[in-house]
Amino acid sequence: MMYIIDTANVEEIRRCVDLFPVDGVTTNPTIISRENTNFPTLLKDIRDVIGNDRMFHVQVTGEDAKTIVDEAVALNEFVGGNFYAKVPISAQGLKATMELKKRGIKVTETAIFTQQQALIAAKVGADFVAPYVNRLDNIVSDGVNVVGEIVTMFKGYDLKCNVLAASFKTVEQIHKIAMVGCHAVTINPDLFDTLIYHPMTLYAIDDFNADWASVYGKNKILDLFKK
Ligand code: E4P
Image (cartoon, rainbow, N blue to C red; front, side):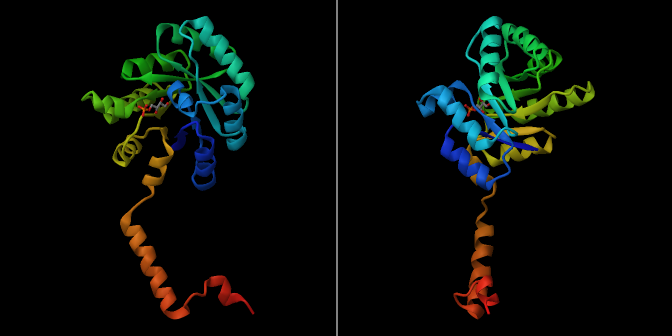
């Protein structure tokens, strides 16, 4: 499963890239607005930190097909590297997606809440669809089930589109998404930390350290190899 970071905070991206297996970065206008800074400079800074190979998904703000295409073309040229234009699902967004695919620009169809939205996005050539798990759960739907059915449909119809599950609040949601064979998740940096946290792990490490110190004191392994 691909792990993507859902933030535009450059320092947090730098920290996650340094520590975790990060496959890319996703943003949306809300995430960008949180940084409250120069947009082009922010995009360049993020690309510099993640390098050209990692995916960078940046959302358009236009609502008609022509503006969506123009924005995606400009972003693709400016951001460079492994770029995906995030296009919210709509009739105009689908028209734009078909045009962008003709021009060789990769597309992530976002703000997906239903299985049919995902299927139609995949049919017009979207490379990823991004269903919103926690927002589905919050309206008493079942985010994991929606994602699972999208994964099953794509397999059944042999569609090459990947499912990028988004909008997470808990480790449990991410685990269940992995169990339905979802291709990718996008999560905020705090959730990345929480994914690997377990109090029993910390307890075990404390025990190892105490047992080691009971024999070797403050010496670490390299100290014991010094001649
Ligand atoms: C990412 O592609 C989505 O825009 C994001 O995960 C939405 O998350 P939220 O529901 O926490 O705003």
